[in-house]
Length: 108
Image (cartoon, rainbow, N blue to C red; front, side, top):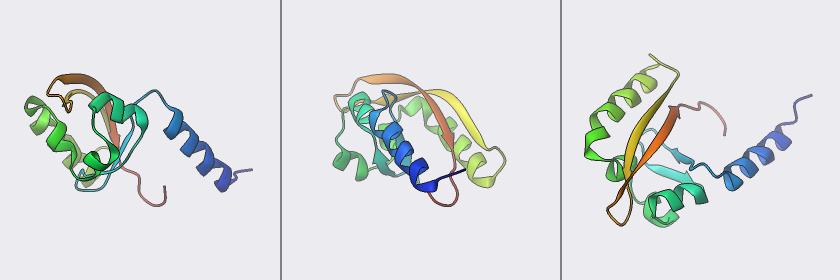
């Protein structure tokens, strides 16, 4: 039997303890929530990320492709996407990431 409360608690545990960086963004690609691993990867604090969006820490060579994928997901043309991209760390050095993007409609 599905227990929604247990499922939510388990999701929070995975989010908080994952060694994979996990950002949650809104429809405009602004950061809503990030886990510790994501903050370590990017070098930014929660507050710094919350005041900006994905584009501001994305390597310029990945911006156009990322925007096209986001539009296709939002339009419902694709359900999700996995791609390689580069993020720019707070110290200016860029890091490679494998990114999985999708949309979560309804409750988190």
